[in-house]
Amino acid sequence: MSNDSSARIVAELRAWIRDAAPGAQLPSSRRLVAEYAASPVTVQKALRRLVAEGLVESRPGVGSFVRAVRPARGPDFGWQTAALRGRRADLAKVAAPLQTPPPEAQALHAGYPGPDLLPERLVRAALGRAARGAAATSRPPAAGLAELRAWFATELADAAPARLSAVTPSDVIVAPGSQSALASIFRALAAPGQPLLIESPTYWGAIQAGRQAGVELVPVPSDAQGPDPAQVDRSFRETGARAFYAQPSFANPTGAHWSQQRGDEVLAVVRAHDAFLVEDDWAHDFGIDAEVLPLAARDDTGHVVYLRSLTKSVSPAIRVAAVIARGPARERILADRAAESMYVSGLLQQAAVEVVSDPGWRSHLRRLRGQLRERRDLLVAAVREHAPALTLDVVPPGGLHLWARLPDGVDADQLVRDCAADGVWVAAGDEWFPAEPPAPYLRLTYIGPEPSGYPAAAAVVERAVRRQSGQSG
Image 1: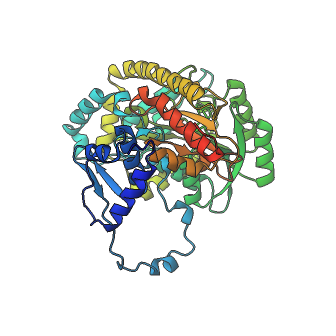
Image 2: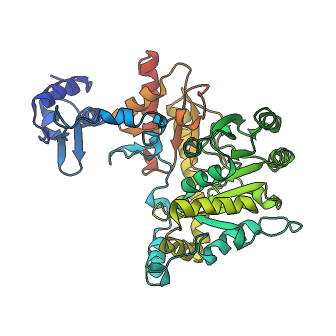
Image 3: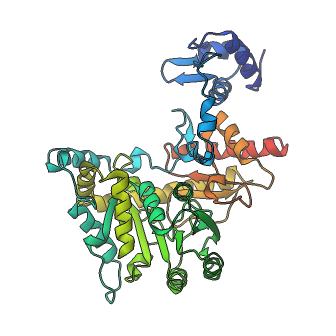
């Protein structure tokens, strides 16, 4: 008989799976449609839920199969619980933005642009040229290739007022991505147990890096305009901290963008406390309606430790970032980097040089910004029309994300699971808070494939919210 819901299909397939051997193939979608007199959409929804529950694995073009499980009496790893006692249990899982959805899912959770937003032709050509040169077989300097360090220095120096001393290549340290760089920066600037001021909410990777470094994270509330300079000053005075991590341009996840006045006020507070401002300029290449004016370009006294990555604008396969610092702080960061990884692959560094020095690089950035504007506006429109339960306080002038507040009382983790079962992957906002979140949030990215699917994806989120609130529709 006809069945308008996938619930019956899910229930009966669960029973079938309990008696099936691991690896057994489920009936085809066509057969399930006929057996249950259901639509193909209903059948696919049921299969996605079984995948989300870990009972089934989907092999595109082949079919769906009972997921292989470990024997009931497998090896006993219980001894590890005692051996790992005292280690950080909150670092024991992969963050939501790094998790891989099934191929058919609408991915609104990840932080890396899809291939259609990257300079694929430039990257392939650059890797080929780099592989044919000396970088393929030689060890680069610990601080990085001279040509790449010079490029990063020039990029920042060009934004600096003429009255300030210019940034030089000797101020630059190349790192294998911003995550590794953050860990080294935090270890160099704060000893274990010491306080480190950090915006809240903020980049989840910075929170993890701080915890790994063993520092005490002190949240500083931040809104669409950035943190209140008076609150930053109060936090420095009350804690005795000597460093503040912030994202002045298109913050992840909120999209906040500091005005030049706000940046100068915060920098003045940092200087007054003889402290460091760790400026994470991760979205330097992702300006849509605003330009990036790094605070580091207005500092020549060593108070700003500047971080910029090429990973998201060039390719996730080329994990290259730069730290720009002066004085003893630079030497400590370099020593930490050398102790952790000795040097960054010369092949990847040379490939990065080849990309950013190609005339097509600037053309790519102009095209990318237009694509990001279009996708951002499409997702904003989809949320406002099809997911009115979500609140968007800010339409970000740059970056890659929307930060959406859920109605009070919604269980964000359960909502994420419900959306995944319906083929839409989103990220709960808890991971972006160094302390307890004040309300439930979602981070939605507009860089995944198929932007034409944004309206349908937003409708899935709305239905998941309504289910929790007991509403129909």
